[in-house]
Image (tube, rainbow, N blue to C red; front, side, top):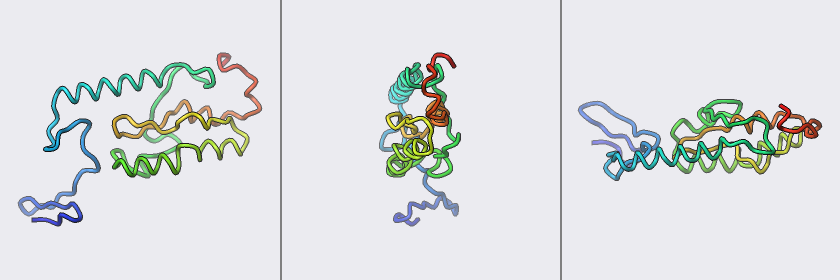
Length: 147
Protein backbone atom coordinates (compact mmCIF):
# COMPACT_ATOMS: atom_id res chain seq x y z
CA UNK A 1 0.00 0.00 0.00
CA UNK A 2 1.01 3.54 -0.42
CA UNK A 3 0.02 6.96 -1.53
CA UNK A 4 0.11 6.91 -5.34
CA UNK A 5 -0.69 10.61 -5.56
CA UNK A 6 2.46 11.70 -3.72
CA UNK A 7 4.69 8.94 -5.11
CA UNK A 8 5.38 7.24 -1.77
CA UNK A 9 5.51 3.46 -1.84
CA UNK A 10 5.53 1.14 1.15
CA UNK A 11 7.39 -2.11 1.21
CA UNK A 12 7.46 -4.35 4.27
CA UNK A 13 6.76 -1.58 6.77
CA UNK A 14 9.31 0.72 5.17
CA UNK A 15 8.35 3.84 3.24
CA UNK A 16 10.52 4.73 0.27
CA UNK A 17 10.46 7.93 -1.71
CA UNK A 18 10.81 7.82 -5.49
CA UNK A 19 14.13 8.87 -7.00
CA UNK A 20 14.39 12.36 -8.46
CA UNK A 21 14.61 11.07 -12.03
CA UNK A 22 15.24 7.78 -13.79
CA UNK A 23 18.79 6.55 -14.38
CA UNK A 24 20.70 7.40 -17.54
CA UNK A 25 18.95 4.91 -19.87
CA UNK A 26 16.18 2.60 -18.72
CA UNK A 27 13.09 0.97 -20.16
CA UNK A 28 9.57 1.34 -18.76
CA UNK A 29 10.19 -1.28 -16.08
CA UNK A 30 13.33 0.42 -14.81
CA UNK A 31 15.81 -2.00 -16.38
CA UNK A 32 18.89 -0.69 -18.12
CA UNK A 33 19.96 -2.43 -21.30
CA UNK A 34 23.61 -2.52 -22.29
CA UNK A 35 22.85 -1.09 -25.72
CA UNK A 36 20.95 1.90 -24.31
CA UNK A 37 23.66 2.61 -21.75
CA UNK A 38 26.38 2.37 -24.41
CA UNK A 39 24.44 4.72 -26.69
CA UNK A 40 23.82 7.20 -23.88
CA UNK A 41 27.50 7.19 -22.85
CA UNK A 42 28.56 7.68 -26.48
CA UNK A 43 26.17 10.66 -26.75
CA UNK A 44 27.60 12.19 -23.57
CA UNK A 45 31.19 11.63 -24.75
CA UNK A 46 30.39 13.23 -28.11
CA UNK A 47 28.78 16.26 -26.45
CA UNK A 48 31.69 16.71 -24.00
CA UNK A 49 34.20 16.50 -26.86
CA UNK A 50 32.24 19.04 -28.91
CA UNK A 51 31.88 21.52 -26.05
CA UNK A 52 35.52 21.11 -24.95
CA UNK A 53 37.01 22.41 -28.17
CA UNK A 54 38.79 25.77 -28.11
CA UNK A 55 36.57 28.72 -29.01
CA UNK A 56 37.86 31.95 -30.57
CA UNK A 57 35.81 34.15 -28.21
CA UNK A 58 36.58 32.29 -24.98
CA UNK A 59 39.77 32.21 -22.97
CA UNK A 60 40.85 28.69 -22.10
CA UNK A 61 41.82 25.82 -24.35
CA UNK A 62 39.12 23.41 -23.13
CA UNK A 63 35.94 23.32 -21.11
CA UNK A 64 35.55 22.07 -17.57
CA UNK A 65 32.13 21.04 -16.32
CA UNK A 66 31.17 21.29 -12.66
CA UNK A 67 28.14 20.62 -10.53
CA UNK A 68 28.70 23.45 -8.02
CA UNK A 69 30.99 26.23 -9.27
CA UNK A 70 29.73 29.81 -8.80
CA UNK A 71 26.27 28.80 -10.15
CA UNK A 72 24.84 25.88 -8.20
CA UNK A 73 22.19 23.89 -10.03
CA UNK A 74 22.81 21.02 -7.59
CA UNK A 75 21.70 23.24 -4.71
CA UNK A 76 18.65 24.63 -6.45
CA UNK A 77 17.27 21.74 -8.52
CA UNK A 78 19.32 18.76 -7.32
CA UNK A 79 21.81 16.45 -8.98
CA UNK A 80 19.17 14.53 -10.93
CA UNK A 81 16.31 16.98 -11.53
CA UNK A 82 13.03 16.32 -13.27
CA UNK A 83 13.00 17.65 -16.86
CA UNK A 84 10.56 20.44 -15.91
CA UNK A 85 12.85 21.65 -13.09
CA UNK A 86 15.85 21.59 -15.39
CA UNK A 87 14.10 23.50 -18.16
CA UNK A 88 12.71 26.13 -15.76
CA UNK A 89 16.14 26.66 -14.15
CA UNK A 90 17.74 26.90 -17.59
CA UNK A 91 15.12 29.36 -18.87
CA UNK A 92 14.81 31.55 -15.78
CA UNK A 93 18.41 31.64 -14.55
CA UNK A 94 21.09 30.34 -16.86
CA UNK A 95 20.10 31.03 -20.46
CA UNK A 96 20.46 34.78 -20.65
CA UNK A 97 19.83 36.37 -17.25
CA UNK A 98 23.26 35.57 -15.79
CA UNK A 99 25.11 36.93 -18.85
CA UNK A 100 22.83 39.97 -19.07
CA UNK A 101 23.54 40.92 -15.45
CA UNK A 102 27.29 40.44 -15.75
CA UNK A 103 27.32 42.46 -18.98
CA UNK A 104 25.43 45.26 -17.18
CA UNK A 105 28.11 45.31 -14.48
CA UNK A 106 30.87 45.82 -17.05
CA UNK A 107 32.03 42.27 -17.63
CA UNK A 108 32.38 40.38 -20.90
CA UNK A 109 29.15 39.84 -22.86
CA UNK A 110 28.58 36.09 -23.15
CA UNK A 111 24.86 36.02 -23.89
CA UNK A 112 25.30 33.62 -26.82
CA UNK A 113 27.11 31.00 -24.72
CA UNK A 114 25.08 28.51 -22.69
CA UNK A 115 26.07 28.33 -19.03
CA UNK A 116 24.10 25.20 -18.13
CA UNK A 117 24.82 22.01 -20.06
CA UNK A 118 22.70 18.90 -19.62
CA UNK A 119 24.25 15.49 -20.13
CA UNK A 120 21.24 13.14 -20.41
CA UNK A 121 19.34 15.12 -17.80
CA UNK A 122 22.26 15.77 -15.44
CA UNK A 123 22.94 19.53 -15.11
CA UNK A 124 26.50 20.82 -15.30
CA UNK A 125 27.87 24.36 -15.42
CA UNK A 126 30.46 25.18 -18.07
CA UNK A 127 33.18 26.57 -15.80
CA UNK A 128 35.14 28.02 -18.73
CA UNK A 129 32.17 30.18 -19.73
CA UNK A 130 31.56 31.14 -16.11
CA UNK A 131 35.18 32.24 -15.59
CA UNK A 132 35.15 34.17 -18.86
CA UNK A 133 32.11 36.09 -17.67
CA UNK A 134 34.27 37.66 -14.92
CA UNK A 135 36.67 39.26 -17.41
CA UNK A 136 36.08 43.04 -17.48
CA UNK A 137 34.88 44.26 -20.87
CA UNK A 138 37.76 46.75 -21.01
CA UNK A 139 40.21 43.84 -21.48
CA UNK A 140 38.47 42.49 -24.58
CA UNK A 141 41.16 44.07 -26.74
CA UNK A 142 43.58 41.38 -25.53
CA UNK A 143 43.52 38.34 -27.79
CA UNK A 144 42.19 35.14 -26.14
CA UNK A 145 45.29 33.28 -27.38
CA UNK A 146 47.55 35.53 -25.26
CA UNK A 147 46.25 34.09 -21.99
